[in-house]
Image (tube, rainbow, N blue to C red; front, side, top):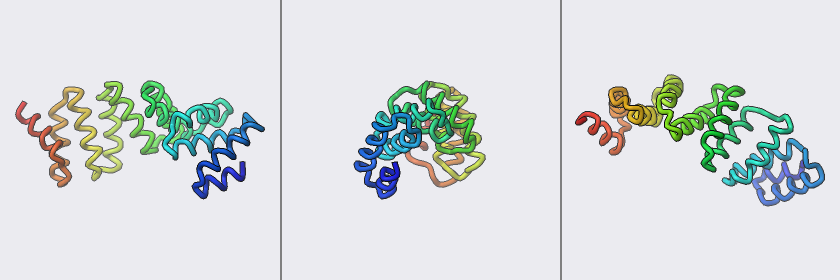
Length: 179
């Protein structure tokens, strides 16, 4: 385990993976090995390989906000949107201010067609970071999808006034005005 950690810290991912897997052969219920192996796979961009380890961490009693958030990420990457939403909800119980977990939850809500809920969550993020044009644009899209073009136009105008409008956002604003 310790050797695996040293490999992980020095970004020797192949060696870390092999060492962690060797540790799991000897101690299959070693919670910290499962946790680190899950994180390692997420960091390497292989969420499908990370998921079983992260779920095992939860089974072994290591439920934490970051573990649930990573489970949500893995589910989202695999297209299991409802499961991802549930995992992000659990992650937010442990870490309610985590921007990553809130954005993950918002992405799930959008993918599930729950645009009003996504727009409401974006209100919180926009309040915390009002100069982030991407949040305003994301909320504008949620408003459009929920049939609320008036609020969408307000968001798009704000982005335009910030000087951060894109050709796509300007075209959407023009479409709203025409309609």
